Image (cartoon, rainbow, N blue to C red; front, side, top):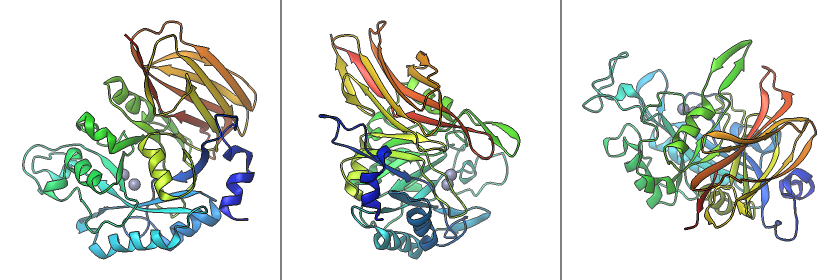
Length: 373
Ligand SMILES: [Zn+2]
Ligand SMILES: [Zn+2]
């Protein structure tokens, strides 16, 4: 069966079709992964083939590092960047499978001469900046890779301006790694740096619990007035991308996937493909609007297992919480204490667990609501 047919036939892919609701379909993808072109395993062919034929994704982005771990002087050669884009074009098939070429802008504190936590590569003068990593991707081929190792593109503002001029998009990666300056960019550049990876605050791995602060740090940026949607990626280094980001798009091609990601009409999961639709007064996730009355939040969840918890988070605190214990849930909640300017997002937690014991989560991108004056 073709992927296009699958998108029509799998009930989850249809976003609760109703008279005014049928304009978007849900497409599943992975926005983060590596191959042997940087520090992962396998070829771009392996990566795209696995995404399409094994993980059954609708879209995938290949994001090898612009440097190689453990090889200080290495940078991605021009031919590799050309190869990523060439392979993405080869696998991309409108209506069936969207393959996107990208790279991971890999900033590290050790690039600055003043780095003291270990040896410095001394590429730039002064105290270290901890901008962390950002994935960069384009709909069309771009000859030049704007590397974190190039002085003109070693900061998020310069990167966003260069990428924005070429119609590309950027996301903030894994917010708990060298994160101090990750969100240090002009508010206007949030139009290009549209999304941030989100994951649970605690992650279980091989019997140990890790303090990952994935949701806490992403939410912290929102609390400071930042604008970002939520995506997730496997960050696979084994050539095994999987469904982590759902986008609500009108059709399956690069332009439509980019249009959705640019408007933050997307949500993130860490494991199961949980169906999630969040509207406030009819506005979709990612939107900003002014409300004259009390906002009415409508949440539809189509779980793949029992839903343990659905929480509506408003500007840093839980506004409303239910424990449905069923597979599907429909919530309508009016924010009676509304009065000002808030963001809202929804977190869903399911009963099922992955092989390490982590429960499946889903996080909608926020919706921003201001009171009309
Ligand atoms: Zn990274
Ligand atoms: Zn990565």
